Length: 67
Image (tube, rainbow, N blue to C red; front, side, top):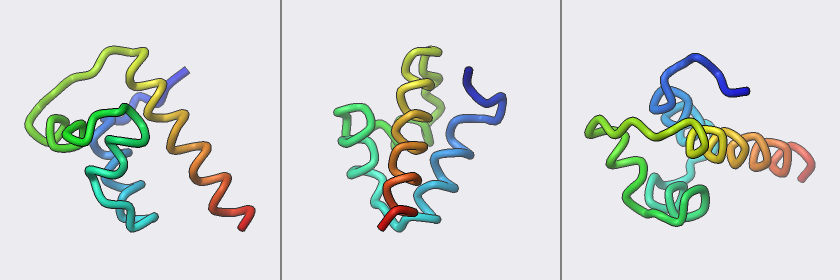
């Protein structure tokens, strides 16, 4: 189940926390380097895409804590 918070807010927070560039995030999470830019311009992804992005952020956070 996904969070009720706006996806862009969650992504922007993740980018700040990790220092990951927006294009890298989009490429790795969605195979779309413009994904974050599109979110910033108002794109509203479907539930499956949102779940995929949140899953990517959770996995990345876990990997960064282990190291």
